[in-house]
Amino acid sequence: MQILTIVLQIAILLAIVLLHVAYATYFERKIIGHMQVRLGPMMVGYHGLLQPIADGIKSFFKEDIVPEQADRPLFLFAPVICLVTMLTSLAVIPFAKGWVLADINIGLLFIFAMSSLASYGVILAGWASNSKYTFLGGLRSMAQVISYELPLGLSLVGVMMLSGSLNLTTIVDSQGSSFSSMYLFPQLIGFFVFFVAMLAETNRVPFDLPEAETELVSGYITEYSGMRYALFFMAEYIGMMVMSSIGTICFLGGWNGPFEVPFFPPFWFILKVYGFLFLFIWIRATLPRYRYDQLMALGWKLLLPLALLNIFLTGLFKILVH
Amino acid sequence: MVNQLLFLYCAGVITAMGLLAVNFKNPVYSVLSVMVLFFHVAGLYLLLNAEFLAAIQIIVYAGAILVLYLFVLFLVSLRKEVKIERFIASHKISTLVSLALGGCLLAVIPSFKLGAKGQYPVARVEQLTHTKAMGLELYSNYILPFEIAGLILLIAVIGGLVLARNEKEVKE
Image (tube, rainbow over all chains, first blue to last red):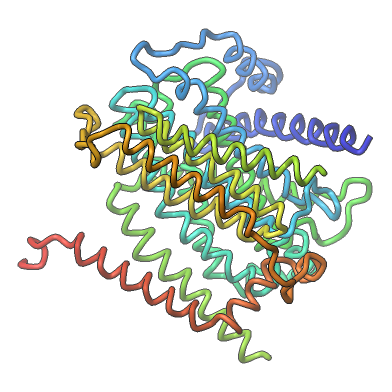
């Protein structure tokens, strides 16, 4: 019986998240459209509202082409790794008090582990396709993920020190429910480092070198088509949502808001996550792409020292207060 | 009962993946089987209530070190297969030696005894959470070995930097 309830919960969570992913693409196309003085999708349904569903059906029925020279098992498996790792990290995210599938003690570390594994999908996709564009995309992604994982992890160490826990629910609880007690304020440096590293970790503009259209066709996904392409796409958006949720939980006070919304406790959480997603899209519409050496210099020479400084300052502050 | 079954599963997969890693012709597949192996080692840690170690196992070994291995594999040309001469010419001798080694390993199993219970039984670890228990021990009783390990790693980092540094850049 207990197992049945858990399976049911997982199914509901998956359905809701995938629906959100579908509409996140609509959200993105509409916002970018308006920022570029276009209308975005308009044809399918009222103001293009059914566009994501049409896209889903289209990619589902498209032919799944496997290149002849590709390493077949890995080529087929790579998008699955990407999606599964991203979906797994959803399990530990608390959407509201008690609204979490697995309330484990190492929630934050679990998310790091899963996001570092997701890079395997990208790397293997790049290698298994056996094409120079995908391979370069895979190599770039590998270097990028290794360099930005460190600042990402270290930027959250300050939050861990303040809350004294790795459990995501405890982290939210320790921030209290008032506006000024959010970790955003004491951890401003940490938040800055986290935000930049988050953009790089999810391969978004301005750090989308693994799929730089102007030089690499579309990087590691060049050879993919149909449903497998859609799997990569979903993985990218779920990755954005997971990272936004972590930002919300660790810096913006999670599900706490100015007042409690009756019947729907995750209201503020979802609002904050969408705020992050809007930032992602805004940045995509405004900023040009970094050059590769600039990307590496930023990660190692600016973000890493800043994250270490943040840890030092947080520790010093804690000692002085005690 | 469930724990024992899970242990058997993890142990079985670890052994199988170890064998596969040695036997795959394609090194990328070898690396992947080592990744699956690391996962099941993390599973063993979880069975021991060592959740922090399990997470670190995946982040550090599967997430960072293996990715670096893949990097090296991709950048080294794999067209030419590396052929090394056998250390021992005769196949029979090597079989004999490995069988004897295996026999020795099996022979020491009966002498395995559980040690005395330490300060941290399962109940206490669960109450403290594993991360905290480990942190307390590491930074109080084992601070010296911890610092020494840190120093050794620092030396390795500096050594790596010295080796990787480009001579031309120094002259300019």
